[in-house]
Amino acid sequence: MNINRDYYLNKLINARGIGMIKILTGVRRCGKSYLLFTIFKEWLMNNGVREDHIIAINLENRANKELRDPDNLLAYIHARMIDEATYFVLLDEVQLVSEFVDVLNSLLHVSNAETYVTGSNSRFLSKDVVTEFRGRGWEIRLYPLSFKEFMSVFPGDKITGWEQYVRYGGLPQILNYHTEKEKQEFLQSIWKTVYLSDVVGRYKLRNRQLLDELLQVVASQVGSSVNPANLSNTFRSSAGKTVSALTIAKWLEYLEDSFLIERAQRYDIRGKHYIGTLPKYFFVDPGIRNSILQFRQMDKGHLMENVVYTELRRRGGQVDVGQIEYRSRQPDGSQPRKQLEVDFVVNEGGQRTYYQSAYTLYDDEQVDREKRPMLQIHDSFRKVLLTSDVDMPWNDEDGILHLGLFNFLLEQ
Image (cartoon, rainbow, N blue to C red; front, side, top):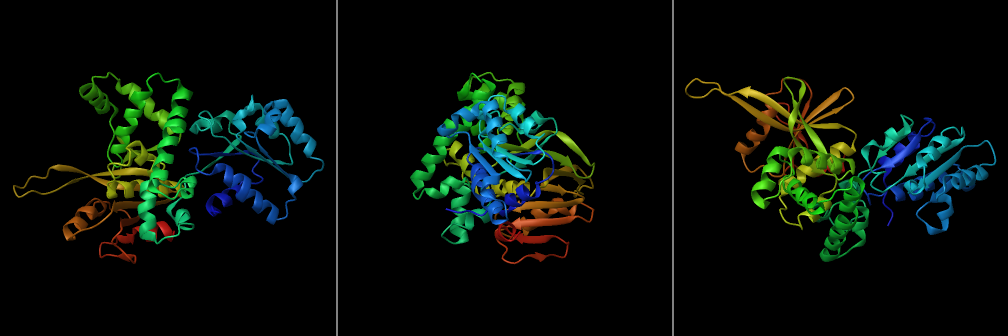
């Protein structure tokens, strides 16, 4: 099944000639190898690059075992480069090469080599992998399929596609399975044998069960604030297990480093500063989140919020949770302070956009409640209310854009 991933393909194309190693990172099974070895290689050949100037090596293939030796690999690459034209070196599963950092640093000194690499063990998946190259690596971050990419090959209508997407997610392999049971078994299998094992193996964690339980709690709280101290108390009271808040905070960092979850910081819109407490966590893929919970707690609003967050991140924005304080006059004349939340504050370059996400708006009262936080923001940046109820985008008298979920996801 051929799935076009033009957004990432353009990133690979535009990264030519920047003088850095191009590093494809992202959660396992999100399509890094397919992007590099199929989509990008095909583009190169269609745009005048001869096949003998593409040195593509799958280091996971047993036939290439000898090339896992760093000296053998470098010798093989140099032997293939027989003229001064540009060669594209594509290395898959590069972490299987011992001293691979030295190998890649060596390739930086080859003036006519454009090097692209992927890797998918727990060390290579770390978000700080680019620092291994001391500023000489260019990270291209991949996410699982967007809803638009998913629908480009899904045989049904967008309503059915949405139901499948928010339940089973966008890992490309999920499209190979046809029954509900097969999809659930696939997701639960890779969750236990791949994702959880990666984190446990990399950080040598002793209590795999507690990490599993922590993820279940985080998965059940998608769209809600997460407080490590409260989680520590929850473990102590419900299961009699002592896990410090510091340990929980570290575990959450490990899960971020493996690209399973992302943290959205809380930002004081009026005060223009970050608030260091109570962030929110979102999963890079709803199918992974749902498999952790064994496909329970399928709240439409929270799942939509998770998908919207990931889509905004996929498009390259810095995404925070907005907080704004205001005073509301009461019948007795008092004006108590209240904190309102804007679901997402998105900054990209010099532009900012505020988003509120609500799956369904039942009545005017709910519309007013969703708009209230944005009406307290007195700047000229765009404000968007996302909902599944809207068919055509429209602006209300308060200057807020009402945008349909499918318009947002499919018509970027």
